[in-house]
Image 1: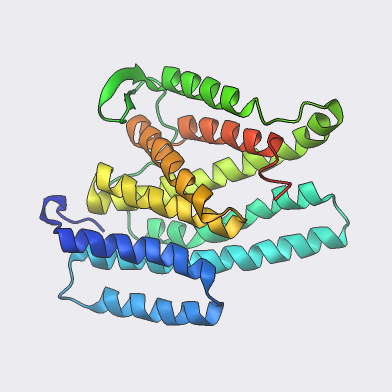
Image 2: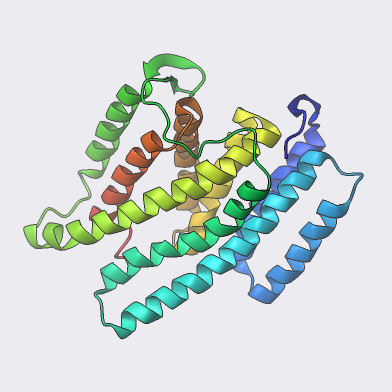
Amino acid sequence: MSIRRENISTISLITMLVIFVGTVIAVQLTTVYMSVGWLFILYMIYLLRPVSRGVRDVSLLSMLYLLGYWLCVYLSVFIKEYLNLVDFPGEFIIACSRLSLIGFIIPFLVLRIITKSTTDYLKKGSFTETIYFPLIWKGVKDPIWRFLLIASCVVIFSFSFVIDYSPENLYSLLWFGLLFALINSVLEEILWRGLILSRFVDVLGEKLGLVIVSIGFGMYHYSIGFPWSICALFSIFGMVLGGITIRSKGLLPVMILHFIMNMLFVFSGLIFNM
């Protein structure tokens, strides 16, 4: 599932962007029955031989995304209903509901088993590879570990002004936050950077693949309860995460930064108070 990247036309590139990001947005705003219609359209595009190989590949990935989304939705409902019956705390239920991302991952894992991609970020990754600030490929050269250290200090300082420091709130949020951050950061990175980004880099190359996947990553957060303006910010954050993944050639470094960000979201009230 790879094409000659140098042959991608502007029209094909725009088509791929519209297909994938359009799927990410549309599936959150429609019913499952309407999604079946969109799935049929994507399948028709996939079957059209005159379209470029890249457009067909992105249509396939979009179909898998659509299927994964609804698997995730129904798995989330099942988890929440079960935990509500057992009368677990609401924060615990929200944290565990992120296990539903496994439903999102399944279709892409099946594709990975059937068709190996040339690019594979589903591995540990290196902390000693270099990254450039602020443009990932251009700027001040730094090893991944130091970039992570500086980025972590910056985001912690930025969030320090909006955290409720009362002991009772901190203690009650700590364990639920750790559970949420661990589940969410690991599964989202496996899905978005380990599986989806790997495929898009195969099709479009590192830079263009990063841009399209990052936009999709940001827009997908609308389904979690964030407004579109915040989703746009998540797209920028997604480019940082994807850049770290590409430069480190794996997921562990980016999982650490994602985990820290998720913990800060919890302490700032962006998660359990939505």
